[in-house]
Image (cartoon, rainbow, N blue to C red; front, side):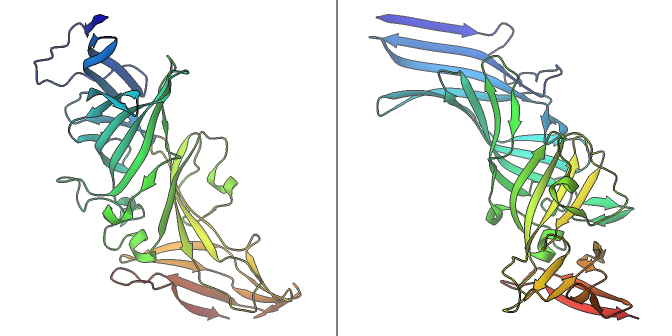
Length: 354
C-alpha cells in the first residue's frame, strides 16, 4: 500500500523566514498545524515532515508576547522505538517572551516539545523548559529584591530561575491551559542576584503554586510579613520556599522548626503577598509540656540590602499563665548568612524594652 498526505495551511509560505503571526484571539494559548506531509510505503511511514505554531499569550498570570510578535514555530518528526510509533514537535531555537505586570520581566524558552499524553482521549501537552527573569520589586520607591532570580538589568542576556516541565495541556477541542504543579527547578543553573531575599536567607525553593481564587494565602496558614500590599483576590501564583529556624534542643517537643515563605502575586500583578507559615500551630513552641515560648507579629525588613525577620512580643509562659518577662517587649531579629557562606544557619540577636 502506498499513500501520500500533503497539507499546507493556506496563507503560510514555507520558504519565507517571516514568523507566523501569533493568535490574536481572547485565548491564552493556541495551536495550529501549518503543514503535514507523510509518505506511506508498504503500509509504513517512510517519510514525515510537519510544522506547527504555538501562540503563548499568557504566562503565570501576565500577558506575554514574543519580541517579533509571532508564534513559536515547531518542527515535527516521526520516531519509532521498540515498535511503538510517536510524533514529536519541537522548537528549533530559543524563544524569548516579554511579560506585562512588572513582576516578571522576561521568560526565555530554551525548549518547547509537544508530546502525546493519551492517544485514546486525544490529550497532549507542550513541555516547556527555560529561564524566568524576575524584576526587582520596588516597595515604596525602595528596591526590594524578594523574587531574587533574574538579570541585574532589564536588557541583555536572560538570566534567572531555571525551570523544566512547565506544561501547556490540551485534550480534543478543549482550550489549552497552563499547569505549573509539575515544574522542576534547577538552582545550580539559576542566577540569584546579590543581596536578594533567597541569597540572604539561603532559602530552598520547593515549588510554584497556583490557585483559581478558591483559597487565599492567609487561608493556607501564611501570615503576612509586609503590610500595605493589598489583598490578593481571584487567581494567583506564587513561589514557595523552605526556611529552617534551627532547633529548640532536647527539651523541646518533637516539632519541626522548618517553615515556609510564600511569595505570591495576583494574576495581572495588581497585588502581592509575602507570607510566612511559622513553626508552631498557634504562634508558640512547647517545652516539656510545661513551658511555652510565644511570639507576636512577624515582619520582613530590608535594611540596605540585608533582610531580617523581626519577631515581636517574645515571651516564656509557665503552664500558660505566668509570663516572663511580665512586662515590656522582647524582639528577635533573625538574619541569614548571606552570600559566600556554605551550610550556615540563621543568626539572631535580641532586644528587650521595658
